[in-house]
Image (cartoon, rainbow, N blue to C red; front, side, top):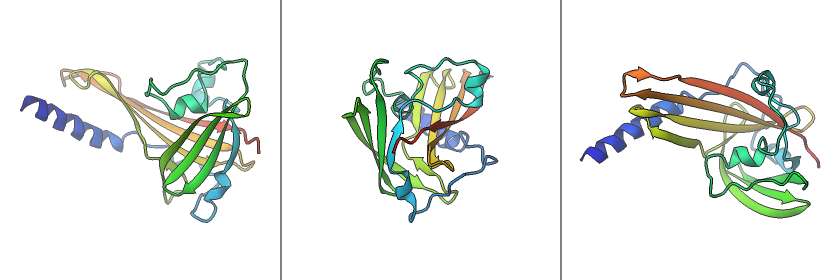
Length: 195
């Protein structure tokens, strides 16, 4: 019975936190995606970000193979993560199957090494959202630990480069009383279109 109560409590917290990891809607969407133009996402892109977001710039983050599209999409799934070799050339291809599905092929030196089909949702704001929200529990949330929730959405810039918006909520407490740091970080990363 106690386990069931704990599961219900965690479920309620997750539902509550879904709305907390929101995106910054004051930043304009350069390309409003619709069912009619969703195929414009189809293309080949660089795996590494074209430029860092303002938070990474503030911390003087070094460009590395760990800061890439593949690592972001497969975040928190350690069994699936693949380390990239800095001597190889990496890209990914996106193909929009429908507003509800997106196929991603990861390429190493021009050859596919992994393929994924992700569930997506095209919303009225013109962004394509990943349905998979990366949820990670560290310790026992709100007892002695925290919850990390990451949401991701896509659009295009004026040069048809891919824009990856990320919203990450980190929230926790100790014994439901002493609340630890609760914050939402928002990033915008740009991935260069190759073709």
